[in-house]
Amino acid sequence: MSENIFRSTCPISSSLDLFGDKWTLLIVRDLLYHGSRTFKGLFQSEENIPSSRLADRLKKLENMGAITKEKHPSNKKVFIYRLTQKGKELAPVIIELIIWGNKNLSEHVSEESKTFYQKLENDKESVLIELMK
Image (cartoon, rainbow, N blue to C red; front, top):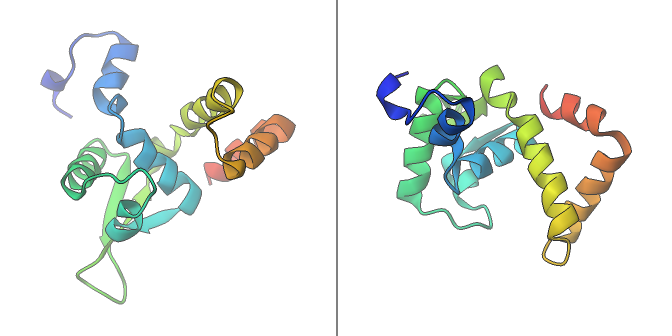
């Protein structure tokens, strides 16, 4: 990974250089929940990521070793994206954002997210283990 992409040697700043935009962690979220996805599957998330931005973020995640990209077994024109162990290690960050969002933005959060939050409240460690498999 090129050192010139980082603004400083601060671990927070450097992490934000990699994941600090409004799309990258949402892609990681989708891959955590679904295990693997195609470009089309990621593109159809409710956040409406522009296709060019999605392609850019997938390439960025692949270059940093957070995801893998392989050809679909039955359609060689389609790629399947999966998180690597490095990518799965973002699960605690995603979980903490879910917890914060449910506590502080509850009037805006979907019922599905509230249900998932209840699972986290009951047994966060088991949910984390399951996501990181």
